[in-house]
Length: 467
Image (cartoon, rainbow, N blue to C red):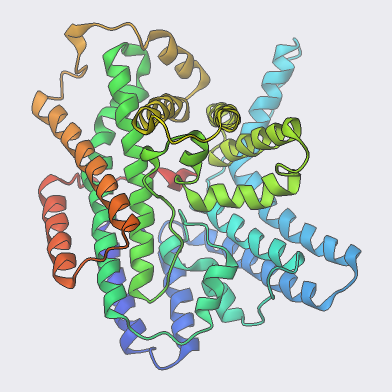
């Protein structure tokens, strides 16, 4: 079920009503309703994939309990390995089986020994990368004795399947979200009003900005060999904002929806295009994923504790795996490796408060070109883009005969509004200011009016659903 769909517009008020007016006196009933609603939400795509999330949840719940009862280190390692093997096994099979098979064939072909292997017709379950990482973090934390395992099955199943963030994050830690399922929850009008504002802002980012930009971006990238120069530059620039508005928009809707039920999810984006370094960028972009890789990959590899050479190796490996997490394509691996190198360079340069505006501009431009790697459909397309991007011709300044100047200017206005809001919010939060209820209602109304007037209602999926 999509956040930007009629089905969700009916589903959310119905669940909200049942949650606060039918099950509100019993915590177990509330958690049970969340599980049922989450499974309906997830099963809306394909009910068969519910078996995966249920099985994964059962395994990690039982592993957590078993870990709490065992002091034998060998047995504890075996239990942890079971959890990781199940979660990564599902992820590896559904997401990477054909990718590794193709890579295996290519390697043999490179050495003059072509082979043929049968591919499987595998459908990628929506959100599998997100909920597997969420459940794995639970068992890892229990294994490391950083977290007490739960014996409350309802709370744990609700934690894993919580529908606002189930399919595209934020990737919540059990230490933050799970305890919220233990406590009696009462309706908080202030939090609900804030949640509605976040939902409306997320819908504005997705439907007005991201989906309008998608028309131009998809036209160029899906037939990239027919374009050069300015059309490629605009497509990369527009995708830079499309992916931000698409993914951050989802996160804002998820966080806002959770607030309607009196839950607090972690912040997933913090004005990433105002970053002054690439390290700073990853402290602002997809924060739940970057912090996951920091805590469960980078630090276990040794972090920055074993000298500069090992630190740089750890950074590179972490970003390489992060790139692969995003998809079964060599473009994602190259994208991850590129950001690994950029982060190593950022650490070498160090922090300085001089030339802040210049640094923001430089980081933004380089980040923009790395998004071309991310968006390219293949390595061949990527090679074509960077071979032809600077063949500039003023006669093709806009680059699409089907897009008039008004639409083109409108897209830039949306981007300027986005930058303006990010700058305003950054200063607003820094000063610790709060909006009045009247301001919430006014801004929410303006956003919904803008969505109605300027929105693209082709019901496009969120980009990160494919990951």
